Image (cartoon, rainbow, N blue to C red; front, side, top):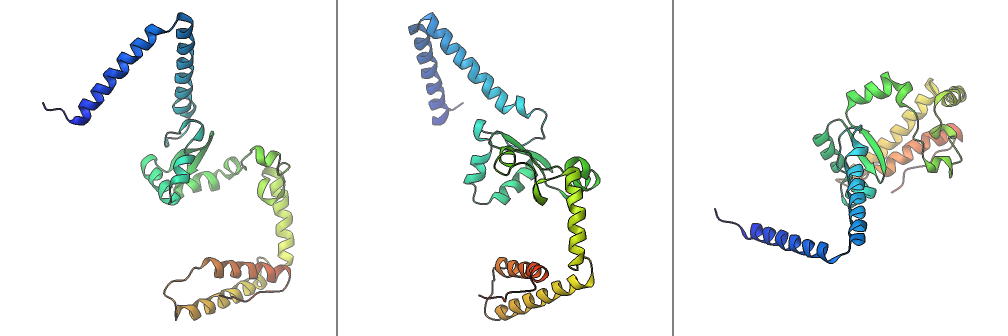
Length: 224
């Protein structure tokens, strides 16, 4: 059987590495050997813990690169959405990727989302607890960060106040439809001269105008 140049190179490299390692072992003292053995053993244990042991009870996912996790792959990928779609196809609707040393369990199909976040909302609707929310944001306060009974109390209060502004009644529907009409007029005026249009700006103005109209009674016109 003919060997390729790559196989010959790999065999030669492994042979040279093995010979060099044997000479290295013979040239060091017993104490140095013990120190190197301890370093190698701890390195192997650390790699085993990072790659397998800490992932054993989590959903499957891409192998993390030790302390960096999968963030290097995320940061270097120009299309992060396609990267997550690739992980979904490979590992299924529930998979784990590592944001540095922190595991992030991703739920990426509609049926699973309904099962966890609607049917079992009391169990899975808690907010993420981390160092930033504990220190910089001074705990779990505000509409976004709180959960549990405190969140339910503020939700009841917010809905009660918003009803006074017309939320849930015909008044708010009229404000929304007015802004939708202005948005469509703006888009129609551009569709005659442009084949493509970035919708992020017009949609932001539309949503902002609805909020401003409810809170301040003032709106802004679409420009650009």
